Length: 361
Image 1 (cartoon, rainbow, N blue to C red):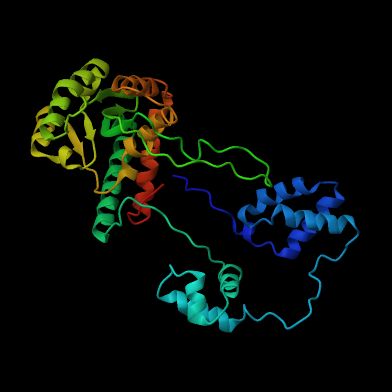
Image 2: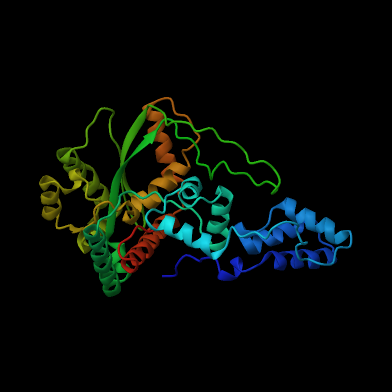
């Protein structure tokens, strides 16, 4: 599968001089500062100069400045980014990459500004962090790789017949109030406009647990649990027997004959002996699922987020309001969304098999 497109190295190889020459050329073509800045952002992305910098150079060129080099400055030459200081910063980072500029400054007797310049301009470093569901051990990564390779092997042999026989499901809470995401409230604004502010809000206290099972053709069962009901092995077993199997017989009668491949995560309720015995009795083949792997569960990475996107920002007063709104949200999902979920699942599994079992996006 095609991987995520990454920034080309060309996006990062423009010097200040290159950018200024580009600005000069654009001014000659008659472009204004705003248009030039947008062009630079398109090409250089986060490495583009600010709109204020672009305006400064547009003004200088318009007033007749021809030389795009920095003007000589009085005083001693800057040595903060010399080889000696670069080595100091590298040594400081060698034992811990989480250090702040202040901490490195204290260790190296350099100014905080000098440390920052070395890190960003000379070492081309940025500070990153990434939330993951769990810090995977080598054994857990190996389990994810084995699951992925077995899944891909089955798909290569059986193709769409394999995917077409899979039913996957899970449980999720639907709240009386779920605030919109930052992406949903984002607004298109000019580069020099202030960003809109969004207040953090908590989810509503009233909530209803839903059990949802689906395949490539859509949702087979949406079952809202009565308030106060605890999901245990016996309850889950009863849903499989009294709700899911009749729903499959009604909506996908051919699946019972062709053989169902059943998938859910490895929550204790799902892996209980009472549940596995029922699945074995129905002759439903159980697809394994590696531990701590919501990124490989179609409900978690696709269906639930898509469903809740329609519900965010709405307030529901009663349990029945939540149930009806969830029903409508699922009904409004594009039919192609379920096929997309399985295609994305296949892509994620291939990435997982190729990246040593690390989490995928």
